[in-house]
Image 1 (cartoon, rainbow, N blue to C red):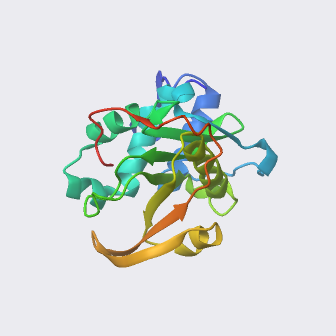
Image 2 (image 1 turned 90 degrees about the vertical axis):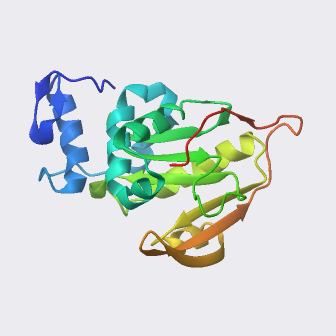
Length: 218
């Protein structure tokens, strides 16, 4: 997949060919900028891959994240440029932070991350699963669940014993996947749930999590 651009389209985005134009249209559709008819989705066609293998898409993914969780970024004093830098730190395979992307018909339609920190008011809790994002047109079709399952698998591979997350609206989804609520409180104008999940490591017991220095929260 090539995320480099040459022709200008809606919202100032650019593309090199019609395939890239279609990909950007699908993503822009989540913000109401483009109205399109999407092809039917086949669950077995969804591919979950490392962000490292799709690093050219980092600027676009960062923009979606920054738009989706703008109050959180503002509270942390993080600009769109900071969001891009944060995603750029997640191109690891054997260390945290680590990000995955969901791909359908050569389109990146979702992402999720394992991070050392994801909630500034709970600095002692670590590590976190966060940044779960799916393009609007593909929500409700199991993409987020696939990302969550794969992120848990990656956490186990890295010998993580316990994961945390916070969510303002999808507690039921996570509860159905084995997560337990620790507390609920107001954060950035929304009532959020902090949840945890105990993991049974399936990795080599001698392996240890390696972390990269200088990582930001979001």
